[in-house]
Length: 139
Image 1 (cartoon, helix red, strand yellow):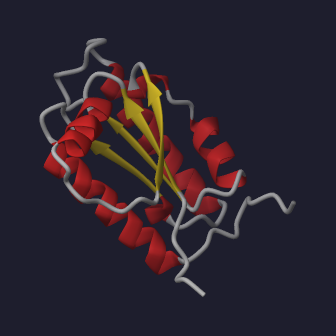
Image 2: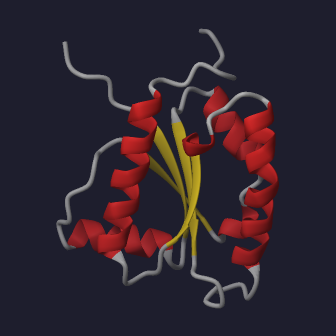
């Protein structure tokens, strides 16, 4: 039997983080195959309920990634995302979800190497926590 692998949802900004993921792929930079990607126009458009629903749907971790501060294609979307994330973290802890299950990062289009590092880190963090048991719907 193979070792358990975490399922991680990566919600990536179209202009920077998704392009960084694309650069990592084109450059053949190795990173864990544990992620599923959703491309959004801006990280500021990610609703906290999307993250909670992802955990409820069986994902063991969620990564939200956007442009670096000051580089947002939509001027201040990444600041909006940072505020939403700051409000979500205490809620997750309150309902008993480990903080490392949900992470936020800034990755630009030219940072393919950094994208691989972030994916490796979140995969290792979630692997240490084990499978998610909170919020998960029983099927």
